[in-house]
Length: 344
Ligand code: AMP
Image 1 (cartoon, protein in one colour):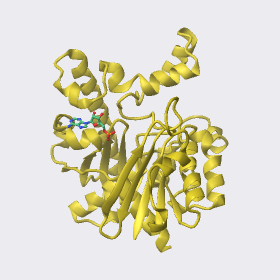
Image 2: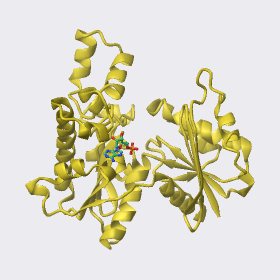
Image 3: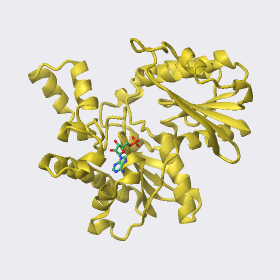
Image 4: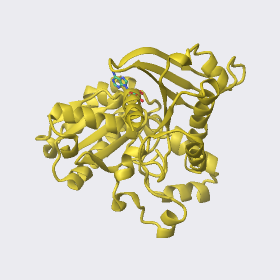
């Protein structure tokens, strides 16, 4: 059996083809610069065409879809109704969901008979209890406006849970862990008895840990100050918080490999702030979980930076907690989700 995974972004399309059950990657391709000025590839259909994939050989296609809102608690087989529902969620993910839908649309056009499955970044966090996902805003903001914590990176946290349970030789349903997906985007997740019960990203992926260029947690009143005192409009605020902050904003670059090599104060401070934030989340999640079987490090930084892992774990409270490094594989998790959906 062959299952393809597509991650369709606004200007890129990532394609990976797996053979099942061997889990062998048969083909892995990325098309970039879609729709950009002077690019040879002007839309997602052309991007699919230039992959030169023979869709008649493929049994199913799994799509990464960023936002499933409250509607999608699991992966689903895509039909017209699912497409409409993903469209309805565009206001919650205005950059990502339309691009994900484009990927779905062009595969439907090219190969209308292949089952397509939507795998949502938010779905793993559908188990968050209300006290974890409702913000302390007027309750109508949740009830009427759907403003709540959704959490992201769910596919990665779900994969890490499966692998961690194997390493711990525990049932997934009895596994209590803190997973740290530390890449350019970063999030922490408290997993109790195999279910996400708190996570650091929120209404959007901006909340929580210090990331490559996102600030993570800040006092929300800073936004008011930027608008009222410094005349920032919403675009400027958005750019500042999402693209100019985090490690990049603190020390001028966001690649931890380079930052670790630097000897200057700003580089050291940037790493110290990032590490402190991770530790604060671990501390909070230890209280939420009560028993922690292990802390899992993953993502480009979590998997590769000995310095960051050591700095996080170098703490009296954490000295008796096991920690593992697990290389995340979101595409393989999407394949596994597809298989679950196809089984049903
Ligand atoms: P990701 O978004 O998961 O691909 O992670 C990307 C980030 O991982 C890069 O921006 C680097 O900061 C970090 N990274 C990758 N390799 C290393 C390494 N060998 N040491 C430290 N950080 C690394």
